[in-house]
Image (cartoon, rainbow, N blue to C red; front, side, top):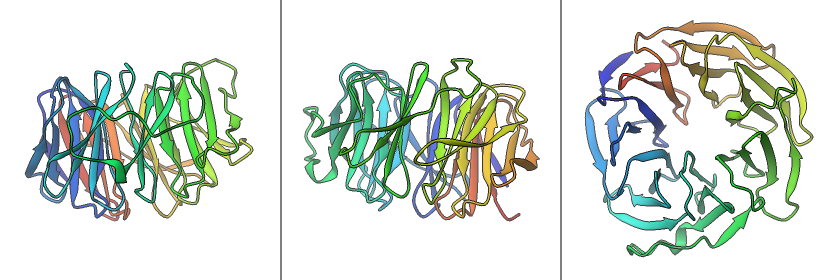
Length: 299
């Protein structure tokens, strides 16, 4: 386990590179995407180009690209090998908390004020003129967060007081809606797919609900966090889940039983973001005070 002072203010978002060797973070009012060597916490560079503070960040699973949103109507995509901006994405005036690549790395998607915009990676031209989306998925709603399932079948999208599951191919449209099962009209603040795409975890308030897909039957409710949950994710083998939040505790769950199996307090204060490496070897969490912790899952 290693801890370092990555930023001077709260971590907004974080993501591992596909090989788990690198960690990308955004924080506070910084315009940069900061890159770190996950094993040591050493700085590995930063990606520049945003005109206002960076928000969400994601790697394509083939490792070629890093995409990040900012607090204006544009997102950017960088070539990871060169650090050069390869595309500026026109996102229609929405402050963006999410970006997601298709699992085959063929396209990147960002929520906009008129549905989900999608851009083919083959269209990236290195120019500074913002590219309009080549396709729109879902509906014309203003979504807050989106995520493709690892299996490639689904696109999950949250909006104010509603949560939607769409066909990622864009052919059959809306598959189901998943409102708060307790009827409290709460926002779906975080969500994650199991690796096989058959289960979806959605955070409502202080609860994590597990749903069977595609019909959305509720499987379990996980309780334990006494404060806001800022991150949730499945381990790559699907046998465990990780959640973290403002209580400063990282919790590990057995999704099959709904039981909390262990927990960690890494001493970084309120946890604002977390990530799991694609190979399942490492986890990371980022705090309100700008600290980052990375730990070996098997340790």
